[in-house]
Amino acid sequence: MPGLVSVKTPPDAPPLRITVPDEPPHTPIRPETIRSEPKSNSPATRRPPSPSPSTSRAKPSPDRGSAKKKSPPEKSLINESSLDNPDLGPFLLKLARDTIASGEGPSKALDYALRASKSFEKCAVEGEPSLDLAMSLHVVAAIYCSLGKFEEAVPVLERAIKVPEVPRGADHALAVFSGYMQLGDTHSMLGQLDRSIECYKEGLKIQMEALGDNDPRVAETCRYLAEAHVQAMQFDEAENLCKKTLEIHRVHSPPASLEEAADRRLMALICEAKGDYESALEHLVLASMAMIANGQENEVAAIDVSIGNIYSSLTRFDEAVFSYQKALTVFKSSKGDNHPSVASVFVRLADLYYKTGKLRESRSYCENALRIYAKPVPGTTAEEIASGMTEISAIYELFNEPEEALKLLQKAMKLLEDKPGQQSTIAGIEARVGVMFYMVGRYEESRSSFESAVAKLRASGERKSAFFGVVLNQMGLACVQLFKIDEAAELFEEAREILEQECGPCHQDTLGVYSNLAATYDAMGRIEDAIEILEYVLKLREEKLGTANPDFDDEKKRLAELLKEAGRSRNKKAKSLENLIDPNSKRTKKETSSKKWSAFGFRS
Image 1 (cartoon, rainbow, N blue to C red):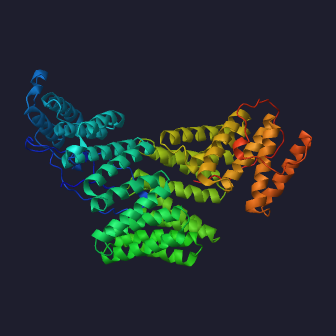
Image 2 (tube, one colour; image 1 turned 180 degrees about the vertical axis):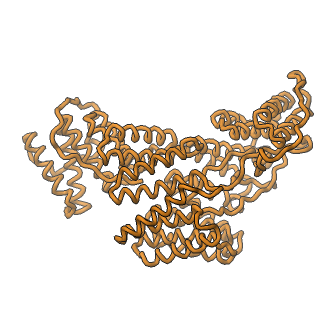
Image 3 (cartoon, one colour; image 1 turned 90 degrees about the vertical axis):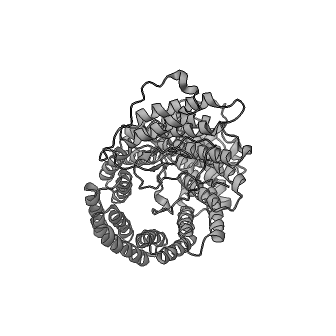
């Protein structure tokens, strides 16, 4: 049975190249069994892969500018009426390949590939799905992607998926699987993570039906899908898939294999995101042992950095410094003093020394990292520089230097603005910029930054994440400062709904939104709604969280003032939160009082 595998492009792969068979295929697609190489980078730095054609796989492309190859003969006299020739489709695909190989550019290759797909469509037997047509459509979509026309690639791939029929056998299953994976990659490049994940799920389902649940190639796709869930901050789903991947590799791979090491690094990332630092440390230690056994020195150093991060989170600072210094020694000796990997360790050390009160050392490491990012070595990606600048900006924010932090965030955004697949990252940076503007009192600019971030997060499918709820809350606070009270109330209401679902009513972020919403209702004259929210919050604190928190006294005082204004006493039996806000209640304008508006910290 042919192998069904995920279409993955390594992070350091050169530009896309389309390849097609040298000989015209006289049989259905002959799928190749391709195994993904173990990732060399940490799962934390996963980048959306470049879409590639299904059976005509994407291969690393040589530098098109340096290769001078003889151009293929011009075939300008191909008549549309001759497209029903069964030999023409394979010939046109070969022309597309030769055109790209000669360096003439993808536009001409696209013309040949489009004609090939038309030829295969005309020559298809009625009632019989044409795998050649599906293959040519995959190639067309890949060329569109190489031109940056991802929106145009989507309908082509959607059509390609409908051509084969899975019950007809493995060849058809492979074509559909590859189509879904390529479509998922394309949605990922457009920043549409929710659609991307749905495509990967469909591809995995077809692969499992064809190969069974425990095939090693299924493990590769499970890990690929898990990485996508991590990008979307859906950590429970990612953890379940990663566990399945580990189980499959435990059966099919030797002990301490590179595949198992990659799985464990991803699992460590998931555990760290969920706050389970001890489990994360255990997975990283096992991954490090596997890398040592396989002689992967640089990978061991990268894992040491991750181990240092966990030690830092556990406030085991001496052990964290030791891990970082080990990694730093390896990176300097193997990659040079000015490599971005060295800069990334400097940033970690800067953060750690700030936590331990060594501010001079912290600032020195920040400056050393910025010097490396200012003059990057060849091969350094814009994403690496932007990520480093974003992390350094967070440290400058801790130094109470918001203007300097703001400059770094704006530089990071500029580096990423033309990069496909970076919409969610840019949205996160824009949200941070909004916080910086808010801190320095530039509220209109703050609101604009949050508004742009919210639009990108909605488009990328993160409109139900806790992070999205926090951004909505911050945008609401900016609106309050601009006296846009109605808009603020709508934002707080949406944030409340999301955070209740994702974090629960007792989470500090959710409680902060309750407080903001109550204050906003008070400013709008909706006293009864404000009272009921505060009664609910106090009930939560009394019954589940305790009353030692200083916010309890503030909220109790605010509630007493509102009750006095309303002329009644506190209702000890608070209503269910579902009934707290009447969407049909009449809103009345009221001058904003001198109330101290509640806020809670933005979390990136």
